[in-house]
Image 1 (tube, one colour):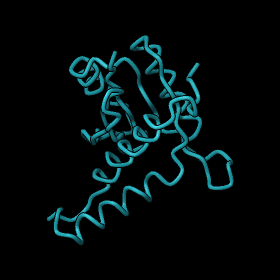
Image 2: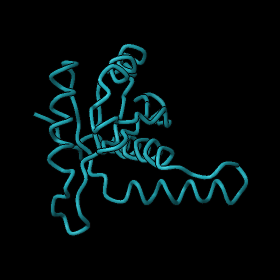
Image 3: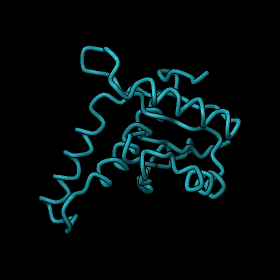
Length: 148
């Protein structure tokens, strides 16, 4: 049975969001949620969960290149735990090393080729990063860490 998945690229200023499904194993960037005063926009997340009815959530887990935690690693885990408690569904944590760099590269290429006309914003990078980490999860869901 195909399942819809929502993915979140968690940040202190913005949260990138992507959706995908287990049938086509493809993902698409949806939106970027702005965080005013670093408050998590739960009403916007509630709306996305109602609209997409996901069976699974995915959250990017940031690490330094040497495998040590970043300043956001623990708060990303906390966000994942809050999602799990709030929506009572599985939440997978995906290593997001290089996802933002890959997103920036894809956006630069799209702009250089003329596919994207306006300049790239941080919001663009965040939602493309969410799509990339969801694609990683769709390729290998067993490699993700499950939130407790």
